[in-house]
Image (cartoon, rainbow, N blue to C red; front, side, top):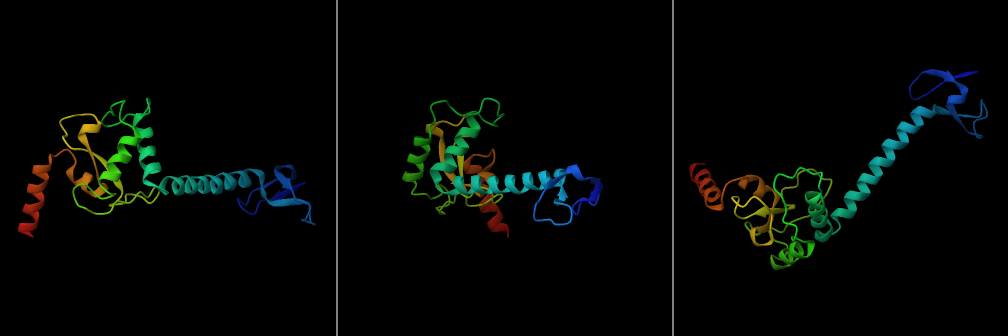
Amino acid sequence: MQKKCTRCNQVKDLELFDRKKENKTDGRKSWCKQCSSKHSKTVWSAYKRDKDHEALSASPYKFLKHWLINVKKPNKRARHPVHPSLSIEDLMELWNTQQGKCAKTGITMTHLKGSGKVDTNVSVDRIDNNIKEYNKDNIQLVCYRYNLMKHEMDERLLAFWCKTILQHG
């Protein structure tokens, strides 16, 4: 006996549909097992991802710890290495010293995971870009947008460009 899946519209053998006692017609679900499985994976992976993002966004500690763990992964090709002694305690001490504000703009930083590129999210910046690793003595916490604008420039050069743009505009 065969049945048409209402999700993929393919006619398949009845055994390829899970049982459903409530269905008085044939005792099977309207979606085939394959469609049900794909749907469940999509729904649950999205749910899990949202829950993970929610958990990481709950505090600056969780957000920065996630960053630190990711950049220290041995198989992760980080743009710049992290000194092994740099710890979450160092980052949180910096966060508290800066009172959750960007070191360069004074803007209150956020820690929102899963919302795309958030301009105000906390970002770990190397003060001197000539030092190619993140270490306790060469980092500051800044807004993502500031760090993106600074890129590989030193702070004096960034200030020059910002002033020039404002004077010209």
